[in-house]
Length: 68
Ligand code: SF4
Ligand code: SF4
Image (cartoon, rainbow, N blue to C red; front, top):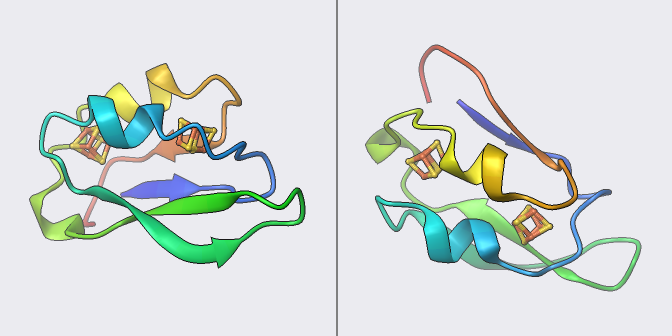
């Protein structure tokens, strides 16, 4: 399960570019800092690889074990 804390996101989309499954996409939601934030478009395809968690410079992503 991928949890994105929108409050920390700066809209760089490194997570989207580096996700090996290409399941992260841009949402239409804008956070309090004025940035468009990502969302997991196909959570059932997530492999819990944690690449997004490791690549996020703002530590906005947490990947937990368990169902997506
Ligand atoms: S890598 Fe982090 S800061 Fe950048 S868009 Fe993704 S969640 Fe937001
Ligand atoms: S844990 Fe891996 S597969 Fe799942 S969204 Fe993050 S980078 Fe993509």
